[in-house]
Amino acid sequence: MGGFTMSIALQLKQARENSGYSQNEVATILHISRQSISKWENERAYPDLDNLIDLSEVYKVSLDDLIREKQELKEKLDLNDAQIDEQQKRLSNVNTKLYQNTDEGLILLIVSLISTMIPPVGIFVPMYVLWRNNKYNSLYKTIMLVSIIAIIVSLTNSFVIFSDLFLNLGTNTVYPTK
Image (cartoon, rainbow, N blue to C red):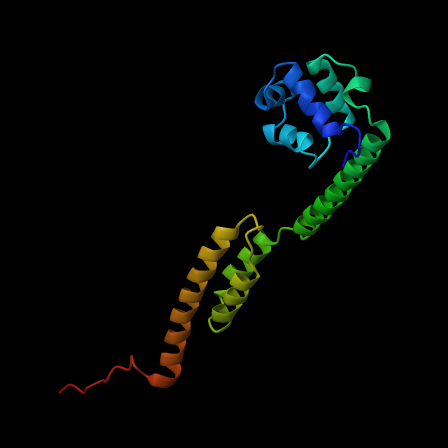
């Protein structure tokens, strides 16, 4: 990457070694990860301007001495900034997509509870509520529990109504007395 002149990565590494610091020590001083220092010294990433200024202070060298290939560094910094901007836009899109749906947890909970009042409907509506529920709802676990209970109650009520109307299971026989 550096051509016939010394690459910026090599200059950063030599400046660090000349000042007697390890990658861990520099990372601790700058409050960044050691992996960042390693990436800078292996040309897998480039420090931003603030970090370059901090590095020049830590290594006690001028910015000019630290980065002799000014045009190459400027291009790499611009590319790095563009990549950061693109990543931030992607993250912003992901966050808005995750949270643009309003929390429907309370509505799902109420629908599930009300459905128990109509026994045959109370079997299927809570199933829909369970399908519709997702882990981003504030009442996620409560909705699951209430929906399962609503299904059980509605099944029981439906069985009672069905048996009273059609099966006559609970019919009492009246015997005449003398």
